[in-house]
Image (tube, rainbow, N blue to C red; front, top):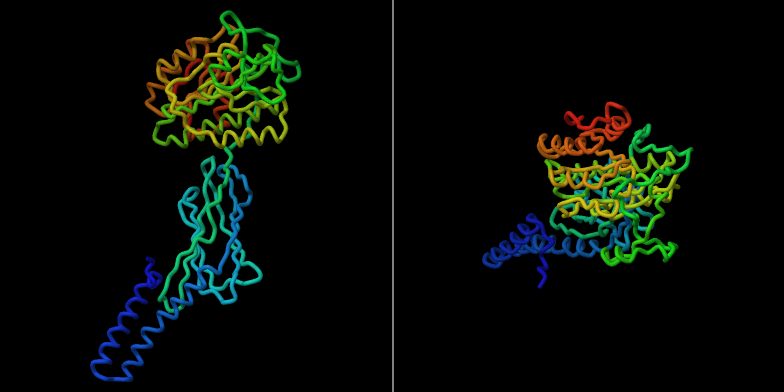
Length: 413
């Protein structure tokens, strides 16, 4: 059973106890005046307890983040509206909105009066640093009285979700290895070299020709896969996002993966705006999204929404079967790469394939140098980075002759 005195503070309980003790003394001494004092000491906390208990359910609230979707590192605002639902005036409220998922400090307010017919508007700033779906709330109200005898905590507003998009930095130039014939010259006409697969696959989309369904891959992936035209695939720039948890297990794995997602988002939007179709895949070879030449705002927003919800995978290796050897232009954003994974990445490269790699140095320098050496020997252009490196700086190194070296000499902070 619920304790009827659960809302009393230490002061209220002490006052009630003193009233009971005074009652016993008044009865023993037969003092009516002392009995009146005892009655006051007992009735005061009980009356305040009843009044505060009635008011704790007579306040309502609504929360509205602005904007509904915000970019990581961008400043936003959360608006709160409170109103009174009962005829009695409300006591002082201490509001606490749980923002621990996006900020180190809590949003707290003290409200002395809540209007009944018009709401009381409150605002507090937010600046989430990490992408993804974050929780704001619940909003709790602690109701106290002027005497400090009672205290009730009531949830006014349930948690809301705030989608934080990855940062997409403005980039310049195009690496010569992926520029191909350029946007003005039309799609590249080159064909993969010896050893390239006969078909290039992606997930089925509504409106695709059912005659292009690739049934062996459909059975293997347990979802409908369709064949792409070779000419269209050859002109598309493939961007690989390495989500492996083992690849981002450095001192700050979340920042490492967030940096990789930010680089992929910046690269995809930049290449598309410059007339290059972009296909983004993960370490499983599964598609994370595509951008057509000069993609519209809806496509760009959808890609950012997808990348915002990327989570680490438990896969230990990178699966290059079915897409690596068939793409002519690849930009790989990799976490820590061991010897076997680096060898697997180089195994299916064709003679005309151009590959660029950004190696996140999350482990020991020797691991990054060894991976860069293996990839460089196979014709990859590699650049090393850390989660503290500016995305635009790494992109600039990929676009300059100095950045197109076969192996990095260290990380660029």
